Image (cartoon, rainbow over all chains, first blue to last red; front, side, top):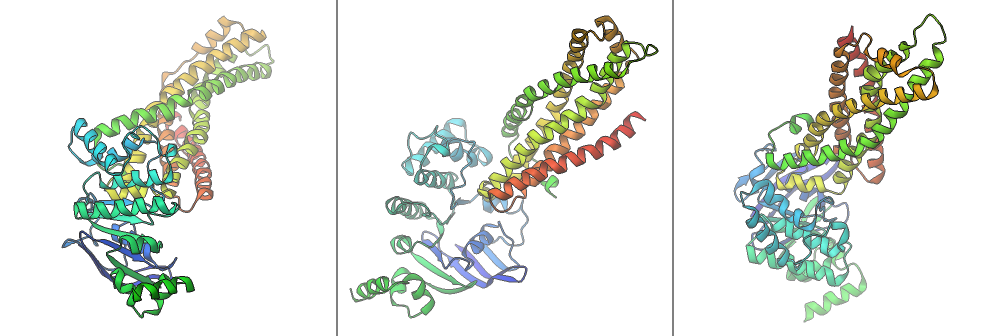
Length: 253
Length: 235
């Protein structure tokens, strides 16, 4: 479980996060949704420690993360996996070397054990046989799947996904969504997904957190979204007349 | 602060050894061609220009060989070669690390708990400090040899006069001082370029800016340190 307690973050006079509190549950796909510029990416970067918060607390399964220095955070960081919007694969390494990278850095596995683990992770994301290809030689969807394989290589307790479906066609997006959901349930991972993609939210979201103008505005499950009267979240999730009609038909159903 | 992170204890020494070897190839061996080409032509030109400017019967011919040797050893092979390498290696390092920064590859390392500064920068510094002196020694030999060939081919000096000039008042300390300067320049070029790459923010335009800044600042610092080191080492 990740607990975020009253965190605030400003860049100069721009108050991006204002007293945000939210909890992300283990074994669930937790979504952070919100408009562009609402602060969701900053919130995620604060949680993983890429940006320092001005105030507040972040706690990973009872272990405080804020206030620790880079070296003290190492232990918790090795339990994190992250899938980046642009995949962030190392271009100079093959698919296999990318997945093996965290194992080489931090595990005491033998070469054989590492190879087995890499092959297991690649098989898990349906990328068997692509070991020797470079990121530039595979499609965007495959890059995302390689990113997932790298993120799960160390058996993470926490998985962060930043816009996992951006730039993907709807069918490939569903493949990525399903992978995220399966991995979350299979390994009881606390998964945090930042997304604009309402298809994903409805498809795999277990717990949804809506951030609005730097504040945590609404939290609930996907069924509650259909019934909420909150104007801001309704405007965000069902922006067009067509979507509003779908919402009404879903509610009635 | 960045250097503090760079020189902190590496996570996996065996991994760093492999990286250092890769960087020696990338930074050093792949620069051999340009260094050799430049040294050959500069050695030849220095000899011909010295010959053209010594037009007095009072100055012995071997002075041409002496001047070529001193120019190559004291200044050209260390400073000018390092200035050329600032452009080639410096821009390469800054753009490589800068691109990794803007494409979130460095963030990915940080999230995994890897000391990204050390992983990316330390092997480059060690590789450059190790390989630059070899490049400079090669440059010295090639420049002096090219001077001999150009001088004799143009008929401005005989090979025996040139050889005598090369040996005339030879001071090994000049070679050592040149190599000491090279070590400092190697550190400056790699650390300054890495710094500019590591702190790149934005997109492709900023990577280009970082690359330019890396080269400009490296050259300025190399020139300033060259002045200071020359004063300390030779006077």
